[in-house]
Image (cartoon, rainbow, N blue to C red):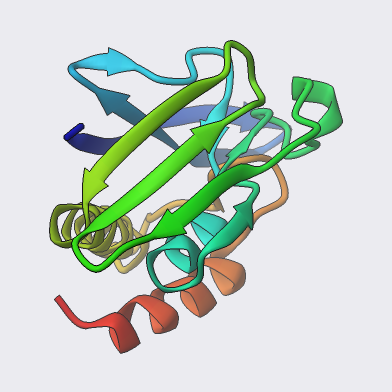
Length: 149
């Protein structure tokens, strides 16, 4: 089985007079960055814990799928103790199998880490791609709380 590792990079830049902080989530398997020219969209990632099917977990850093040549979501299949990913876009096509408990745990840990930064007085303005703000993140955090872990 594969082991999913998740993390995020914190970017800061000045937009006119204000500073913007962005969190850019990423995924690794076997310590190899899975999507080096893209980033993880945490909303579909959290949904994939409990809902099988096609999820647009990978996106362009701008948030526009087609900009990143993403035309198919990751096909997520659930078994009792395993979560399977069939990645078509971005190429090359790949298959991954994760232990369900580890998959759920690592996603919840990422959301908890992002939430801790969100609670800081000078926390982030954007969570992931451009235009994904604190309100949207808090909705995802609420879903995460329902999952447990």
